[in-house]
Image (cartoon, rainbow, N blue to C red):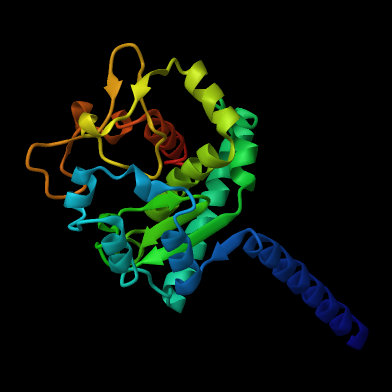
Length: 260
């Protein structure tokens, strides 16, 4: 009797050890950044994002110059509370589950997106707590996903997982330019020209510097006359996927995981 109890206890301990080892391995693929680390990345501007700002980009951000914008950013970045960390980790788990399922369904490739490479990218997530930086919109800087605290509080785990997948596609685009170029080619996107200030196209850290067409539609988000916010733009059919092929790619992939 005692030997059976000891055997049962040993089995339970082994199962628990295996479970916590798997959890640790999963968590090693997630990097939740502190306020200081996130701020360092945003201020260092290693991706040269701020150099792409036109005068109109500065105007809608309510600043005169990039230095003024950087000063605003210092008051935007947050140290995530435990409740935020826990919720975003659950959303990451959900996103990974969906990506794994999509890999199995499509044998690792979806519309010329290498799902295995996408899935294996480490999650790096930082947080902002107000709308003074990029109007509080989720986006990426280098391989870092920026998430607004308000969205994490108000959205479901499932909705957050879709947003994370969308943003991870943007990280994929930056880390795998050859694969992204192949995606554009295979999906019939062609460069028209390099974006210029006179085009009045809003700066977006998730896009490259080119204007594209698919043969019928020109993909761009042009500022409306008298625009006062980042979101005051004209896009074909008022649909974000027509802002740029990179947005199109991210939306299509996130939509493919919508019901998984």
